[in-house]
Amino acid sequence: MSEVKPLRIALPNKGRMAPAVHKLFGDAGMHLDDIDAESALLSSINERYEAMFVRATDIPAFVADGVADVGVTGWDLVCESGFALTDLLDLGLGRARLVVAARASAGFGSLADIPAELRVATSFPRLAQAFLTDRGFSVEVVGLSGATEIAPHLGLADVIVDVVATGSTLRRNGLVELETILTSSARLVAPKTDSALEPLVLLLDSVVQARACRYVMANLPAPALDRVAAVLPGVESPTVMPLLGTDRVFAVHAVVDESSLDEVMTGLRALGGTGIVVTPMERLVR
Image 1 (tube, rainbow, N blue to C red):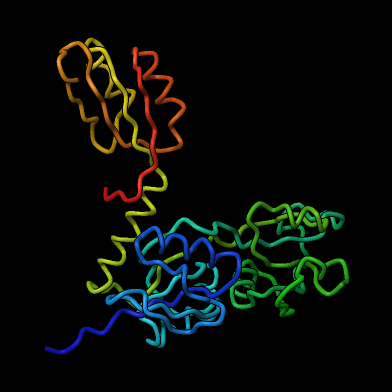
Image 2: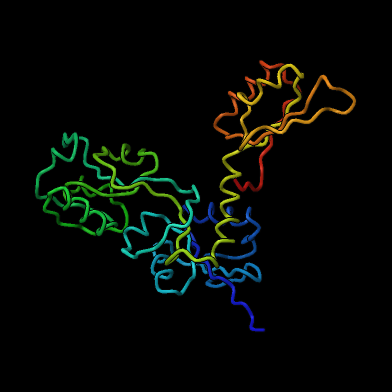
C-alpha cells in the first residue's frame, strides 16, 4: 500500500495575522507551538498535514502553483494576486477593509470630488487600478510597500488605497476614507473545491463556529418550560432534563450566539432561572 502524502498547508510566517491563525490551528488540534514559524519553511503537523511557513503575500502564488495544497491568507492579498483561487472558509480573523482615502484638508467628500486624472499610492496596484479605472478615472499608480499614509502629505499622490481595520491610523495621519473597495479577512483558499480538503475545512470551521457561541445551562421551574424556547432557542431547540428526585425543576441546556448572551441571561432570570452557567466551547458542527 502506498503511503498517503500529507496535505501541505501554506501559513503566514509572521505579520499581524500569523499569531491568530496559528492559535486557531492549535485550537483545532494542529499545534504549531514548538515550531519557529519565522525560520522554518516546512514542518510536519501530524501524519495528515504539513505546514509551509511563508510570507502572507506569497501564499496565493504557492497555492495556485500547487506548491501547497491549501493556504491561509488575507482575502485582499488573494484578490490582488489575480489568481483564481476558491474561498473554502472564512476564518473570521484579521477583518479589515481596503479603502480609498485622501487628505482631510483636501476637502474631498467622495470619489466624485476627486480630479479625473489622479495619482494613487498603494501596495495594491492591481486592485487600485481596476477599481478607479472602472469608476472613470485616469490613474497613475505609485507603488509603495509601506508608509502609504504619508504619500498625500508629501505630494506624492492625490489619494491612497490601503487596508484599514478601525480607521484610526488614517485619522491620526489626517486622512479620511472616501470609499471601500472590498472587505477582507483570513481565508482558507485552494485552487478548487476538493473532497480531500473537506476534513480540514470541517475541522477548522468547527473551531470558528464554537468561538462565536457559548454553552448555557440553567435550572428552570416546570411552569417556565413552555416559554424557554423563546429565550433560549439554541442551535435547534434547548435540551430539557428533569433534575434527580423532582419534577418541579428542570435543567435546560443550549448553544447560543455570544452576541445574545445578555438577552439570554436576562430572559432566563425573568423565567425564574437559577444556577445559570455560561461556558466556552472547543468545537461546534452545525
